[in-house]
Image 1 (cartoon, rainbow, N blue to C red):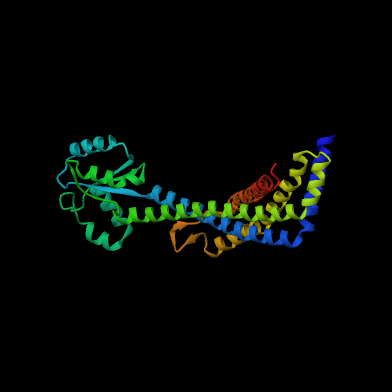
Image 2 (tube, helix red, strand yellow):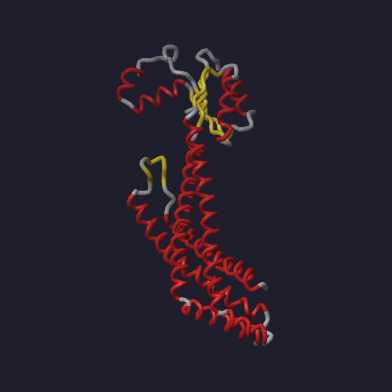
Length: 299
């Protein structure tokens, strides 16, 4: 069939072109390798930051201390008021007696001191441990809690929480911008390589036009050449991603500095990133070729 013959001929011409301009192809592939390694690093960094942020948001709570003279009716009233606040996801009430028992259980010194306390002597305050739906609104929610009649004090790590989440969001934005910028750089490099290939085959292309060769037949080899360059350039970054991330994960024992900041398990994750790199390499290679073909062949 004619379409299959055209496709096979285009693939053969693309492969020949890669080897015919070997030095240019190697230079282009090298640039793609460097760029995709940086893209892989940015993707893995951004993914892990998302993971850190999700873990922090999942574990982040507000502690609202009830007034010492609050009665059981006052506590029930406060619970109803808390449930009506839109940003509150979960409420866990702890009486002062329960807090005392937990402290005694965790520390022998506390046990010595607190075991003698009866209910009237217990100076601890009952509290509501609250999980919020949207961490960005945690400050507003805390202020709402402070205005409740039987809430004495509210703590959630104010200032530090917002700063930490803010830093993570800035890093995420920077990595996303870096990935997009690097993709455009890769497309530009491939486009330049294809341009040089077009110039080197200018006479051949003119002859093809004179004998009535269709624009599609002329374009296809260049598009496939860009695809091959992109796919070849993604091989080394994929290997670095798989083996590099697994090595780093094992070296750090799955955490960074503290157990709070955990790394994404490499199983499946590295293969997903590798697949993304392969797709980016192929698509960007074809996009760079397409831009060069349109501009310099005027077709």
